[in-house]
Length: 384
Image 1 (tube, one colour):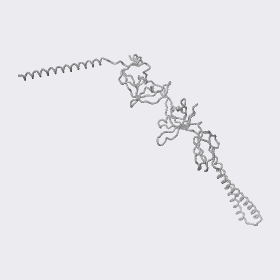
Image 2: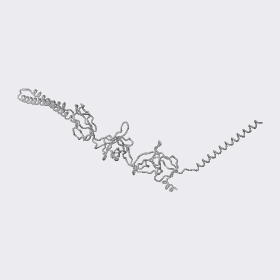
Image 3: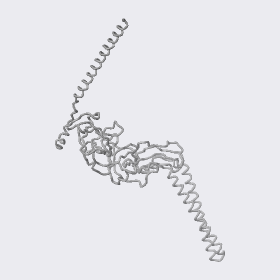
Image 4: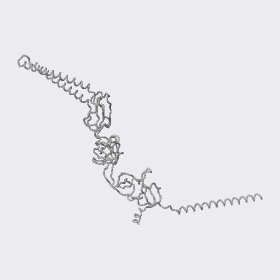
């Protein structure tokens, strides 16, 4: 009897506990449904953009260009080399010194060359004496032949000896001229006017023939050798102009294409293009300065947007556009850049003309964010 009462009591307790749990779960479910209904009823206010914060993809006349870069070099330069071997003397110019064409810049010890010239001159004098002797002998033999004292064969032998003496004399004179030139070559002169770029030897050194002494460059004419891809080289022509950016100059430096190499390089297949660079006013350019810029190859109509409107925080560049009241990220392909009315524009593909684009200064927006703009109102009214 008591056991039955205990079981009934336990069953009543279980039922009461189960009912309590069910009521708690039901209450929580009701609260969640209420929160979901409230969240559904709360629609976030769309972002409001002003007319200057949204722009339209439009066609612009852009300058087509090919990027160029490289190091400047002097069009005219010369390496002063030793033409004879010997001790270097009288080298006083250093890097940065100005020299004139024909100016003596150094000497090679002339002692040995002077002795050789003296020797060659003496040998020429001796050969001249032999010519005089043979000439007198030949004249005497001619007179003896006329008188019948010697045969004509002896006269022919005398004539041959005279010709041999004359040839020896001419060879001795030529050797003296060579020795004289070697003495003149001991004086090293600059072949062009310009500035000393390198001093490659020191006074007192014994230098060999063709040893490099100094390098002289003329900075009045500078040149840029730019390597351009084969595809871009098709649009390059002699006479086209470029604008180069050089650190330290007040503004871009102008250049012009003067030559195009007819052959591409074997390894890179790039085509060398040579541009004459004008000296910048107030900031003289130097050989070896690295420059980069854009070569103008023409103009074309292209869909373009401001450069800062193109976002690059994804693997593919994209624009933040407004479509159906929401922010949409549209992938694009970028191409030519140009400055139009002081603003850098970039040509884009993959987006239709007239597409509203959020300005770059707004920053990153989550895709799907509600957005409206006053700039789109006229278009909406026109559509209605």
